[in-house]
Length: 305
Image 1 (cartoon, rainbow, N blue to C red):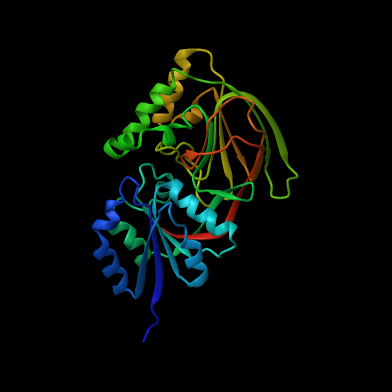
Image 2: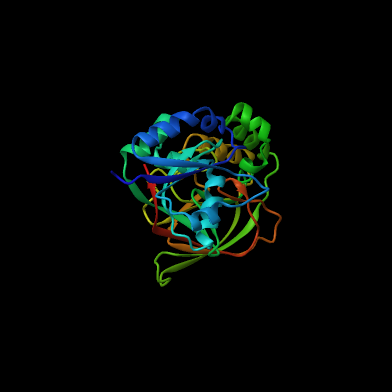
């Protein structure tokens, strides 16, 4: 008799589309069991934090993560810092803005996500690592628009989804803050090729892949497994007309052609803490303004897609 595989499905009951998991409980169990995979469900809750203990005590062949980018990166960060080897990972992108899932073209429904596990082989994907502690799958950002994801009203996100981000983004155009961006980027893993950057900026984003905050194809030729951090810097703008053009270029995936935008590629970078009071976003969730060392890691995480 063929040995059964074991899967642990961790889901965030507060994510926008968490009902997809609960409403399809039987479908998930039945489809996986038909292919010899036993699935255990784990609901994320602040009153307990046991999934790492579970992964240490039981061997799972597949880790299924359901939620948005922030949920996924939190879970993977905890696994990473506890030196637990990542099982093969499947993603059910049930958050409001699922940039990592979009970069992988995971599909739009529960049937697609289950099919990824049953019919596709896991492939290596990159992830960013902040100060050797915190993983990000999609983006690390600061400045204009960077607070959209975590500052947008949760009830509004549940009601109208990604449109809520766009509405909140428009309001940020009335309160733009410039800041001194000081960073050092390294083009190689040995840190022999580097460049110092100092800019008056209103936004910078470090991307792993193409998408951020619900905006698709920010950098068209970026890939989730190309081994690079993709850095977007928007310089300070005085003319209000040019400021509004930034937002609409963002909506239309045309940032690369904007004169105020600088796009760079790096293996790692160091960023100084901002003196100004500027928001920081890590995979759409609130981050900390601090000195950071960020690097890209490859060949450590395999995802079904």
